[in-house]
Amino acid sequence: MKKFVILILLIALVLVSACSTAEKTSPPDAEVPSAAESQGKETIAVCLPALDNPLMLAIQDTFKNGFGTEYDVQVASADGSAVNQATQVENFTAMNVKLMVVMAVEASSLVPKLVAARQAGIVVMVIGGDPGDPESYDSVMMMNQFLSGYYEAYMAKEWVNKTFPDAPDGSIQTVIFESTLNTEATNRSDGMKMIAEPYMKNVNGEYIDSSGATVTDANKVANPAFSSKVKVVQTVQAEMFQAGQTAMQNVLATNPDVKLVLAYAGDGGMGASQAIVDEFAKGSNLSVIKDLNQIAVFGVGMIGAEGPAVLDSGSNKTVFRGTIRFGGDLVGRTNEIVAKMLKGDITKVIYDPLDIVTLVDGKLMAQPILDTEVFQVPTTPLEEVKLGPPPG
Image (cartoon, rainbow, N blue to C red; front, top):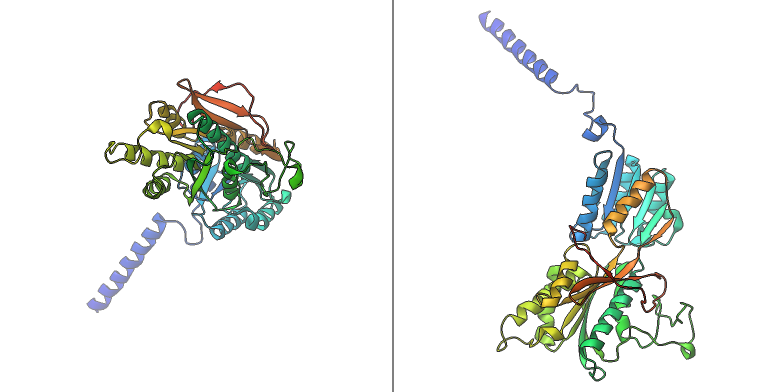
């Protein structure tokens, strides 16, 4: 009998303990609300192709810092996969977010997902390029990628003429660091290659006149960015710093007389510059580079370190001698435009302005490019660039 009583008491103690634990946690049928739900926040979703470079990280930070107090900001990285990004867009659509901001890995395949998001009542902003279907976005903020590369080619041509005024045709060995990750990247890379094209072309490779109208072979016009002195000896896939540095080391092993590098991105261009400076530091007996003043790297983008790198090229701490800045303070402009969109002020198409940024008489100077549709030789006055915290 005593054993039976003891057993009953033990069971009772277990039941009491279980009930006590349940009271300390949530009830079994209730869902624990997220922090955002408990604060009644709406969600801003940001879908980025990756989080592996300064621009992507700056975009992430500006959304979290600019809107994180009022909204639940969720940033998704597709890690370079269009399939991942499509799934992320679908998930955010199911969450019924207030605003979805997308920089596409591959735009055309994402269009149906973006259309579905808009049909669900979500405001969609696409940054970086036109997806090709106006029904897939409420607003698109983009630069002309082909022209950004085209103006880089022009900037490089001007440096060649100034540095090697008497060089014979085909004597300036040149390397192009391109990217073919997506259509936008390919367009920019094709623009860079215009340094070796005698006649003006558009992004589709068609001959055009100075107004942008397509013309026949008989009516083609001279390309202002073409340099007859340039000979492209290598075209290499390289985007970010480490890839640019490694690629340049390999280039110098096979083409030690290279004088000019056109890089897809400023980050990769700075990697190439570092490889060149490191090679020169080996000393005159070992280095294949004898004079840093006669070698240059150019790029596209000015998000953080590119501006100081161009400034340092004046003392040959770098040979990164110029870049194309798009959007001015691109990240800041994105913040301003999104703030307007959240208040219902939406513009369908927003073009990013372009600037040629180089060193002039020891000062970092920008030359604004007014036309974002067709290449024109810049004639606007130079403006000094004041460097500050990133993006500069």
